[in-house]
Length: 229
Length: 251
Image (cartoon, rainbow over all chains, first blue to last red; front, top):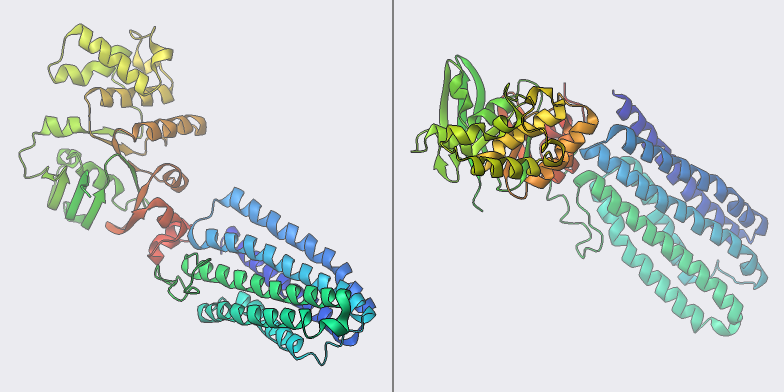
């Protein structure tokens, strides 16, 4: 194995770990929401800086590899994918930190999320999508990546339903600030779904060389250039 | 599209050695096409087919077609001097003649019967300007070409080629004897010339091929494995052998 191959292997491993950390940040934040644990929520926010540092280091390694090795083909696509996914994972972790900060307001305004069917649905679907994304980041399975793209519409609809409900049915009991907290939480989860979709698109690019962003076909016809593995 | 150069099922043997195997390639006009591949894959052999330089090698046998502007250069009516004028070659080691700068540039013109002084002087200025040598050499036209730097010698060889108004420039590793800065200058020159001329370059330097060419063809053991836009060959090649080569995993 060449030096470049070694370093690429190491880089993609670091990215996989970054994915696990980002997922854990969101899980921990939602656990804090469930328990109304303000301290646990604040801790997610504190640990976000660790992920931020890792993001910078991964990006620096990508730049070094581009400068030193002038990679081509699969190696080039791998580094481009790492750069993009790295950034999206950091933003997922940021959303986790934001959810962690919202715990205080959720507790303060006594928002009962455990019995809120719209929130439970959005939470479930988002975590499902996130879990599939971090697994597919490791396995790079094309069919799984396409499946993740299709989940984005579900998350978007869950988000719209929850926000509508917050603004109308729940508003009298929540009050303005309570509605704001619930909407912020919904938007953070919906944004996690968007970022997972971005990552799925990047996995499709890595495997096929096709850029499927902004495509109505959700990458189903990607791979006309041929799956490279 | 009308291609400038084409081969169809081109085979070439050096005696019993089958050097080119059923090669079919199309070269776009006024673009730079790079031919890459490991040593001994047939790159230079293919290049030399485009102006029949292989005719000078004993024991060579060729089957298939080689077309310049749609005309068969092996079986058609094109005379050899005309072919060699239209498809000129630049070699790895600069090879200026042991003559003055002026006489190097006009050598081909004199061979083709052009001797009027004024015409020759105009050709020298025009073609040294084309290779960005005029300002440096205009007061040194009578000096020996062999006194020039390697980069200047290579530029002079290109000027000599341009003077006979070719269509195609065939370049066989034109920068491998030059330092990186001189290489960069020659590559810039190639970019400028590609607006007016069709250029085919054989190179071992993959980064060079990626930098300067619009199209790239990858050869391996006498076969043409894959051809396409350079971006595709280097970002997303179709054939695994191409990918192995451009990523350095070959061999």
